[in-house]
Amino acid sequence: MKKALLCGIKGTGMSNLALLLKEQGYDVLGLDQPTYFSTEAKLKNNKINYLENFELSNLESDFDLFIYSSAYKDFEIVIKAKEKFNSYSYPQYLAYLSSCSQTYAVSGTHGKSSTVGLTTYSLSQGNRKNFPFYSIYGSNIIGEKEVTYQGSDNLIIEACEYQDHFLLYKLDGLLITNIEFDHPDYFKDINQMLQSYKNLIANIKLGGFLIINIDNYNNKKILKYAQSTRVDLVIITYGYQKNATVTIEEGNIKGHICIPLMGRREYYLPTFSKPLISNFVASAILSACILLDRDSPALYLDDDTIIYEEIFNTLFAQSLHILQDFIGISRRLELRGKAKNIYFFDDYAHHPTEIQTVYNELHLRYPGKKIISIFTPHTASRTKALLNDFSKALCESDVLILTSTFTARGDGDENDPSKILYEKIKKKISLNRDGRLVSIFFLDDEKQIIETCLSCTDNNDIIISLGAANKTYIVDEIAEIINS
Image (cartoon, rainbow, N blue to C red; front, side, top):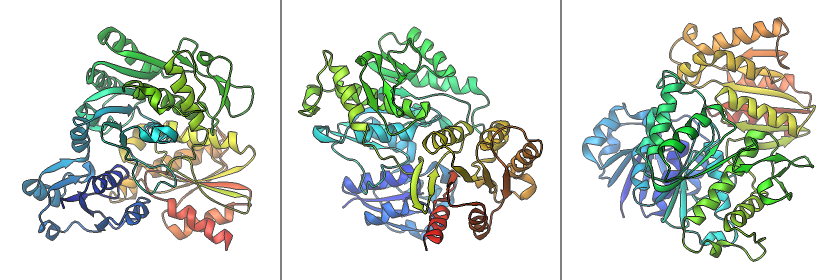
């Protein structure tokens, strides 16, 4: 049996890759730090072992394959392993996989994991279980214990722009959700980001397709570029604007949408805010386009499918119908539990726009409920660059607990931009400016965080952990205490 060693195996994408490699016949061993990650249960359920250290003695065995998270690229064990084994970074291995299969990517600042998860779900239901594909992305469908692997002909990946990783991939089709400034430790401004996306457009194969959201200002620039430089591409636009190929309209019933392209029929979706609805519609378009890239796409229709005059409309409508039953993916507004009348959620939101979308969705789902948030900023550079946007978005919570910036814990308190964010928001509260926020705390001690949440709740609230750091277990502990 071939052996693979994965450094940083607890990462969301890396853990899914570990499951895929096991599916492909590898004996997988992982290395990571002892910090808790929500992916641990998935690894243990699939009997994938990992060591919580980076000792060089772990390299004494022979491995056919060594893959490492880019976060650990400068670790001594990675440097030594690269000298000894057939080695790839996580993005490099995705690039290798993209050269072996027809590959479709979802890119954008927000919504990548959700859209890939939705597409994965859509292509794995009913007769679509016969469709030969697999997917790799930074989360997993809630309740899913194994990686979705129905064959190796087609690959769906989450393509991240950080450090231009997405430029490594060979693509048959691309979906762009939205583009906003992010990763200020790599991109100096939005123009540099846009140039990277233009380079990404060049990576799509001749005659491939581009799906793009035209509600986003920066996406419109990329669309114009694609239309002028890649006349060979099939381009499909979507969004709430009337000139989109697939226009979205609000339905007459809450939670329903209408797609004029499909007539006046309304579709129910298990979400309410426009950005999240857009992800559902985008995945339905992507599913249809991927199926149309195969011979005989009608093979994947169920018997009760409504048949439209055009096959794209039929596949698209079928996807929307399937997605009505989608229960979500991990760490994307994931409902962790309920105690009395308190709902407990966990979300990866680490950018102001994502935080705003989370709050908007919760207000629409649960009008009148108070929101208690535990937010851990991720990367000092992002927190500093988007300080004003963070302070505005977080004021849509009622109670806010800020913790130290995830990557700044070793820098000392005076260098932690989370402290600056805390002072800025506290001043806003004192001046009665913006939002709903009435109380803010700066806490790192987990016991104090739990006690503060318990003291602030009146048993009719929402308690949510936000950010890239794994605080999932804290909301789980609070729910357990209240239920006991």
